[in-house]
Length: 102
Length: 150
Image (cartoon, rainbow over all chains, first blue to last red; front, side, top):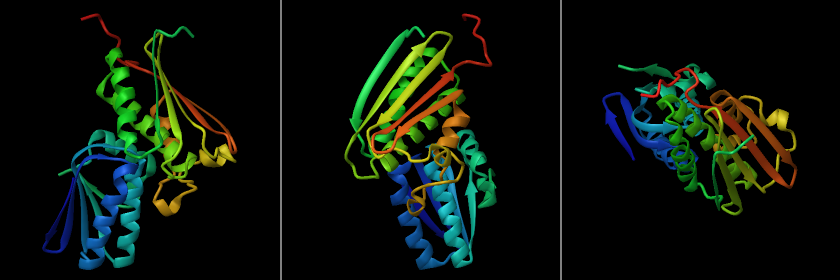
């Protein structure tokens, strides 16, 4: 469901399944706890195993971006699917996070 | 318009039903043999509408009922009506503005109506303060790819 990996100077959150309002709260609480504890310079939200996301996921991305502004880190979004990219485009989420597909 | 097929369903306004609701609508729409993208758009739009009922209509209280009607109309048109009997919207114009949310503390991005509008062909919102909100969306499937019957 959500796996956190602490690497050298980054925290990687491997997300999976469907991200909606029902699941977003638990995901954000888990990530925020780790961010506040470890203060990683880079946080990566890896979407490669995410099969669906609605605008709750945009709230999740924007909220983490704001948290990292506070802690002095940067946010990256990796491997969003076509559907997820479409939802992200609507919100201009690329203003909040670096998006990488490789 | 003549209804070719119809599905009606009501369920408690609990967040664990969001997944069920969008899956149910898409399973019904699958009889039109839509493209992967069309189905993903519909799934996302329905998810937004149902989430609005639960988060805003009933203020995440876990009480109340959401009613979903899906119709198959002629010319590959899917009609989806999603209604709650919750608190209603005082100012629909404001609620439909991108990035405006009445629940920013819950990290709602304020994009629900924007997604519904962008991912369907038409969106109608009816609401009365204290009486609930009804959202009607229509989406034409296989718009760009006429089938040759194969």
